Image (cartoon, rainbow, N blue to C red; front, side, top):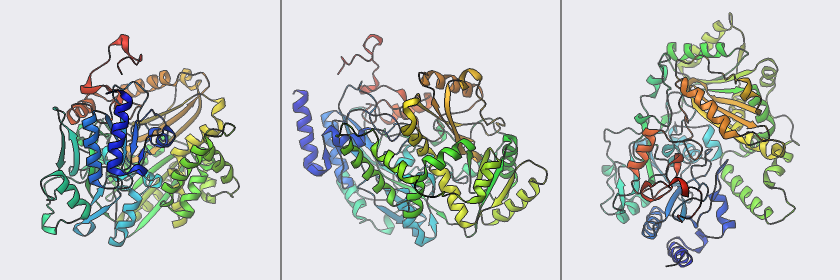
Length: 579
């Protein structure tokens, strides 16, 4: 069969499963799914958007029979390109299965646990849980940009919340391709749903199971040891990172090497009392001392502690303003609609020759500047005084504990703090969480005079004191823009750079990562390897064991893109002749 006939036959079969409307084959229409949120991209033979769990299964059957690579994709908001193709040197066509139409959330045990379907989102879960006085593993940050529940589990997403650790579960429903090339469905949800795939998926979709069918096995549905791990401030290893074998289990950390239909995860009580403290200092050692004190001596752990360097503060203020305003005025529910609208506008603008690239971003950036300053005066005053900004959230008994500690600490140490009003707290947290997208917007608006973006997601050892980066002069001279922010209690830092024009960003990144290796740091910390990092041995072995034929998300973490994990010979790398 010729390649053309093959693609037509497969496309016809997929259309028969999900319908013409939800089977995209024109490159113009597949591009929003085949291009990464921040980086990466490649060609997809088709994008399918199934509307049920059973349709996912049937699409997988067709893809396995046709011997194509499958990329399972949810919100496509990842920062390392791990949910899209990457380049062109694949040995098989690629089909992207977008799961966002399948966003059901089912409550178990009065909301103490939930089953999240493949396209369910964190902000959707927040709304579902509120009447029960509970909240998800992560309630800010990723939820603001529409991240999915399953995507968080598959990518070891860390989240900001100190007591809860990375997204993790040992209970999931997934499909995998065996060593013999057979597609099989594995039900480890702890819910009796039947025996054959169609029965299992239909019973779950329709929630026809009974309360007696829900089991409570000795399996974790969250990282319930993390609160103890993070308190060990003298340990010479990071508290969390993607390559940690402790938290690689089936769907958890699989990075799309399994087709995950649903996950079962814990939820958490909403605190009765809540207070945010805004801290400023010009001395990194002051922040580190506070971190160590709070983690090792507080009876009640803080909820989160989000760090922003002054450079991140400024860039986020100007280039994250439109996202801030949309979320602040319309809520997180509007974010998926905004992304969809942006994709449509950019697709149509791309057909007009004189229209600039990323037209929607440029319009939104100019429009945002018409609005007045959106940040509160006390935060702005701290920006004028301090280089390092720390947003510490506390709850219940931890509120009084933190207040007393900070009152006493700043009697004898450089810096200051204030207790936020409810409005100031919302503004501070939202300002921090539009930071990641702000760098991309900065680059869109100013990139013609700059080199490429380089991002690093690193977890420093828990006993590291010199956490704030001081680049050697030979590297500093190659950098045009730096942004530092992160989850400071966890020692997880997002260190983003834009190179000067003509600089080899990959070479610079290699130098910086080499210095991290010498310090016992781990990377990536929480965004997964994607196509930006090389998977270390433990992670690579996990991928190979999970997906022995390399049928799902081939090439992730710099691994082989070829069937059965073959490697190209040196003389044929990049030539394309193996296709």
